[in-house]
Image 1 (cartoon, rainbow over the protein chains, first blue to last red):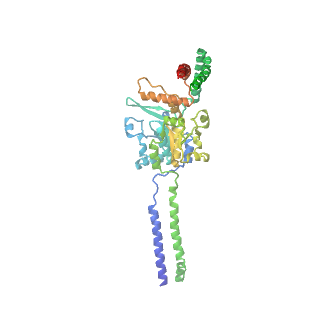
Image 2: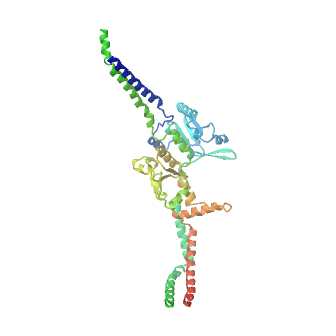
Image 3: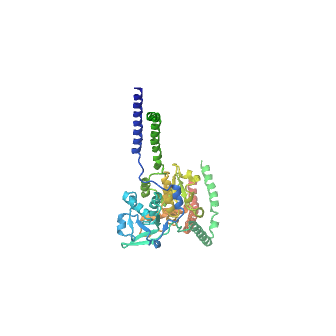
Length: 212
Length: 218
């Protein structure tokens, strides 16, 4: 009798335990997209600069061009052999399978958009998600009379030397000042004018006091 | 003989059962490693990337600098060399490579100030933004167009054509006035100055002489 009660208690405890474990298992949600590169790793990749590619090099069998612009822009005109995956749709399952397939077949994904700045962050996102077979096409896409024009573009080039410009303007001003001085030399003499004002003020006070 | 052996095994039955249950529970501990994945979920990052809220214009920054708004810090993500050649007033240099260094974390990971990244273009600044955004740092912004845009809009604004709207002219004059604040000097500035100097001299002397006799009459 005592033995029976003991087993009863144990079986109840064990079923409860197993139930808890099962609930834990089923309610656990695996995040759909997980990063495979942490931020440090990404930063390293970013500062190594080897992910740019320009128009001259894209004629390669191993490259798969992916156009990240909207479907509307894509219809208007796109680069040869490009497929269209708009940025907001990157994480759709269909598109993810496309990316996975490209990765499995050892192809390099080449992202292109209206300009490199636009392509930049989608590129970074895909890289962090583990699609590290990826490159960024440095190209500016423009339309002229409905014809697509693609030009190589340069990234992060300083277009103007600001310090030099400011110094130049200061120099110019100094020169202008010189010129101005040559023409209007009597100016310094006129500066003595404030002296005249002072005696005038004194005169003012005097008569007022007398009036009182 | 057989009965004896069974009895021996049965005497361990509770410990065995407990061992199995503990093993099962141990399996749960191994599962959640996915959640340790650093930073905000990818979906969230994507929607942040698409939204263009992060951009601030050069005019806005210029306004803030002139009014000496203390609520933001400028961060130059270019190399040290470029930083030394020219940078915005009061900017802090954090080269992109060193972005995640410990010494700079206090600048980025705080919620008191607005952080504005800039570089020559907005390419590297965007990258810095994306990495910090994934780490859930707050109040991050990017200067749209970077130093290049800064130069063409604030430092050296383009004079509008005569057939452009009056707003374009207004914008041009504010930008030109702003550029004076950043050290640019215009040649026509000197002319205006000399004119101003001349004018008050005449006025003062003439007026005071006129007043004199009136006071005396009283």
